Amino acid sequence: MCSSSSGSHLLKSPVTNHCGHAFCRLCLLWQKITTNSCPKCQKRLPSYQFIQHQPVTCTIDGILQSLYRAEQSTVDTLDIPSESDIQTISLSDPNRRYSHIPIIIFDFPILPSQKIRIPIYTLYNRAMIHAAVFICKELQCLCLAISYKPKSTHTGHYGILAKITGVENKSDDILIDIIGLDRFVARQIHKAAEDHLIADIELKLETINPKETKVPNRSSSTTELANRVHAFITDLSCSHPSYSFCNAVQGLLGPVWLQSVQNIHGPLPSPNDPISFCWWAAIILPVANQDRYRLLEIDSLMDRLTLIVSWIHDLETQWDRYTKKDMTSVTRAL
Image 1 (tube, rainbow, N blue to C red):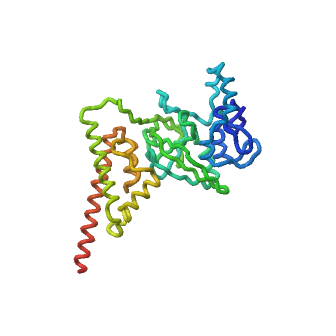
Image 2 (cartoon, one colour):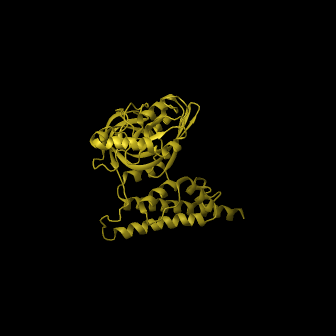
Image 3 (cartoon, helix red, strand yellow):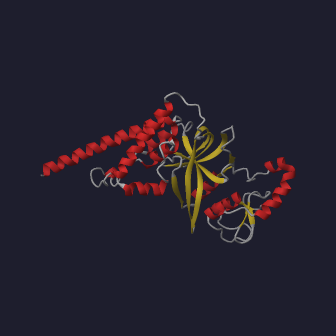
């Protein structure tokens, strides 16, 4: 039996802690966020990343599998966690609607594949995070539902499912690393507060499927737009660094800039992978939060890329204007 804080239940994907006690992997991840100590002996737990990638204890898992194999239907009903307030979602379930999901409200939108570190300084915020954590069945990880400042109506507002990738405990404070996964839309609001919602959500999943039905001329247009955005970013990386012509984009040119954003957000995707490239470009371009949020509301990849191209046009116009202004000032000074 697994006797962690998520309730007593049969072990699944057991991992053995440094102290010798075995728990379900997801239960131990949950324990890392909540108490950072072993439920049995109270010794400090290893890092979140270590637990997440720790191999399953083969001996225990083999015994469990031999016991479970005789009654597989019973095993399925005993999936973790057993506490009713910690929900499990599935990315492959045809029913993509889930009820009473806690949603954390941020001052800025988070996009798919975007990496963010969340500082937790107060007991209230820690309790809110604990209540908002749920499990992704396929990825076998802990997740959060996060949304941008909601509209007055709340219903119909978009957000992002984010995977917890790391937890760092510093005294009474916690730093949580997350990465955006897939979008969701709030269909019905049960509770609305300034910093969180309780809502029924519908997942808006995206997959890159080469067998998708292709609309004539649409695929080539999507590729063309992706190539245009890719060329713009590549041109930025080959340009001389900016220093004074526009404070909003100071330093936003040159190979050092591209290397720095790739260190944070991953390598520049190929335009042949337009979905990943679309989100990556939206993360690194200097646009307003409301503009980024508009992307979350758009289901069509073509329309998203068209919006990003419009951002590029606006940026090019602004840069041309600032460059001409600086050149005029230099001419007058001479």
